[in-house]
Image (cartoon, rainbow, N blue to C red; front, top):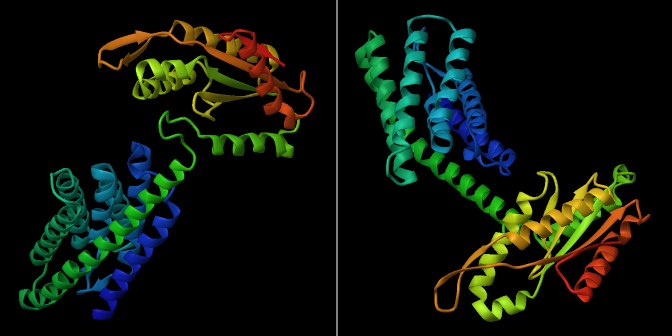
Length: 360
């Protein structure tokens, strides 16, 4: 029995490690769909644990499938725990003998799912949530065994040892699962900070040049039309000097929202400098790019930016933006010149009086 229990725990730990590596780029709680998927994965773990179950007698199998439900609940709530329970229940009925123990197992796994989904919502630390779920699930499991077994004395000895392993194993599983979860969150945070501008939430300059290079250097995109807009907020230094840098930050955030609201979902918007922004417009010819740029210019001009002045009084101000437009293949026949041409256009706009759009 000891070897079988250790094998079960090793299987749980291996599954956590592999699934953690495969899912480190994804936030399980991002959507109902992702919660269902994570629950299905936990259900597969529970099903594997049944394959390596410890036989108690001819009809009863002991395993750690409760860990699968707990893990699902911990990181996906009730949705994941129910998804895990459903996968486990189906496999228990389809691939194992259908008997009294099977019916009890199906009922038990759903009770565990609902109880775990309830506990995970309580105001407890992650550690105590996990252990409360483990304790309740083990007690439910033991109670069920006592109801369907005939030899109470043998069951007591067997279940006592099982409970000890379940509690100790639960602590080990928790710390490993928690470590993997925190490591994945840190990885996603570092990855995001390397790609996203911390103030505006737009793509940052490093990511912008990376994406622009992909458009320029990728042979598959060689014949794809595209345009590039470079934008500069007019007289932004004066705004900072007049209202303070905090107000300037508020304007940059609000300006980013205006850009997102006036571009397509697949357009690439980035902050490339203090008050400088860039927009990559895939499959967009020169004429359409100029229309987009003018729409943005007008939207910025009429937008009222709510800020607080140096006396902490709420005011609304208007700003303007200058925009340079470069397009491929008309009139530029080399994508490598896109940024240079757009920058030259922006310089011409600023020299000519600002608050306008110029194309090259």
